[in-house]
Image (cartoon, protein in one colour):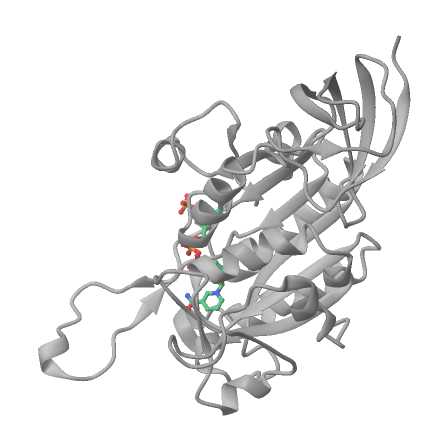
Length: 314
Ligand SMILES: NC(=O)c1ccc[n+]([C@@H]2O[C@H](COP(=O)([O-])OP(=O)(O)OC[C@H]3O[C@@H](n4cnc5c(N)ncnc54)[C@H](OP(=O)(O)O)[C@@H]3O)[C@@H](O)[C@H]2O)c1
C-alpha cells in the first residue's frame, strides 16, 4: 500500500537518510521539504533497522526533482554551473542549452544538452518544456579586431559579429528566454549580469559600440517586471580561479566598483547561481557580487546568511 507522509529534513541524499518519527508502510511516497520552497517527492522503500523505529532508505526513485535549464552552458561560467548540477542529481535534473554542436561537445555531449539560438525564440521551445528553473548565462562576446600588437602599445579594438550584438543577444535573446520561461510555467529565473550598469559612460559600453551594459540592464528590468521569482547576480570582473575559498561580498548600485574588491571567481558565481535555486532569501533580489582576495576574510559557506544581506529588489 502507498501512503503520503510529509517529512521535513535539512538535506536529502540517497544513502544516509534516517528518520525515526513515523511508522512507514512499504513502499511509500514521501514529500521532502529541504529547507527551501521546493518540495521533493520520491518513492522510497524502507526497511526496519531496530525496535527503536529507525528506518534506512534502501532505494529511491526520483519522481519530481527540480529540472534546471542552464543557457550559455558551453560558456566559461555556464559550464561550471551545468557540471555542478550534474554532480547533484539527488536534487536536480540539469539541462543545458548551447549554440553549436562544438559547444555541446565541450560539456560532454549528453542528451540533456539542447542546441538553440536565444535570438530565435522558436529554437528555445524544446529545451524549456518541463523546466522548473532557468539559469541564464548567455552573453554577447566582443571579439578583438585582428592586427593588434601589444608590443606597439595602444589599446585593442573590439567588434561584434553580425547578429551577435548586445542588443540582439543581451536584450532580445534574454527577453526571448524570459518569455519562453513564462509561457512554459518556469518557477524561478537566475540571471547573471554585470556590475557597471548604473554608469552609461562605463568603458564596456563603448566596446564595439555595443552598449552592452545598457542592454543587459534592460533585460534585468524586464525580468524583474515579469512576475516570475528571480535572482539577478551582477558580477564583478570574472576570474578563472578556484571557488569556495574567498569571502563573498554583496553590494548594490555599483558601489563595490569604487573599492579594491571588485572581482570574483567564475566558480563562485556558479555556486551562487545554484545556491540561489535553494534559498527563498535569494528570490526577488538583484545584487552586485564580488569577493575579498583569497587569504583575507572568511570563505563564505552560509548562503542563507549571504542572501539575507541583500536589501535590493533591483
Ligand atoms: N567577463 C567578465 O569579466 C564579466 C564580468 C561581469 C559579468 N560578466 C557576465 O557574466 C556572464 C558569464 O560570463 P562568461 O565569461 O562566463 O561567459 P562566456 O564564456 O562569454 O559565455 C557566453 C555564452 O553565451 C553563449 N551565447 C552567445 N550568444 C548566444 C546565442 N545567440 N544563443 C545561444 N547562446 C549564446 C555563448 O555560446 P557559444 O559557446 O556558442 O559561443 C557562450 O557560451 C555573462 O553574462 C557576462 O557578461 C562577465
